[in-house]
Image 1 (cartoon, one colour):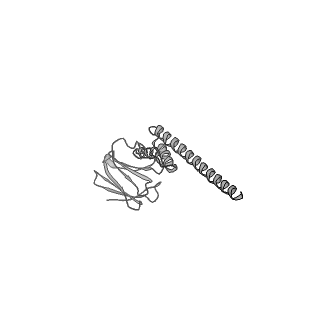
Image 2 (cartoon, helix red, strand yellow):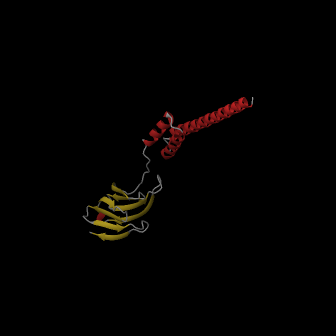
Image 3 (tube, one colour):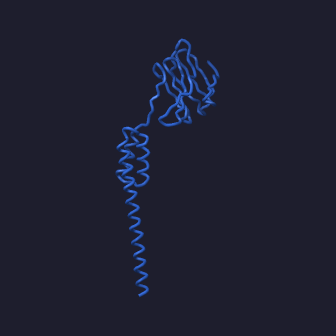
Length: 174
């Protein structure tokens, strides 16, 4: 009798744990589905948030719906528009640490932007304004990000020490 009772109790314990696992799985499926659905609904208005929701949903449960939501979010570039110069931006260079953006303009300016906060670029400084508005055609950071170079129609290469981006220092003009 005691053996039968132990077998019945063990069977009930296994059944309870299976039911608990089913409920937990159903909750994850529901949460993941809701997150993926929300991501799909807001993707047009707030792509970065939609991408975060899609990643979260896929992290909870790998279903066709969460996978589709993740793939849909990965196809949307996250961008912020920078209104930089009065003319055309000829070239943009991103620092190796991806925190600074240098924009060389057709109006002869080289402007430095802090782009470390995705979607929220902030203007740092106009690093150079060429004489007689010679357009700048190219800009580049050194591999370690401490030197910024720019060149243009004036056939002059400008070099700046960017070790302190808040205070770029002219290094040389060649």
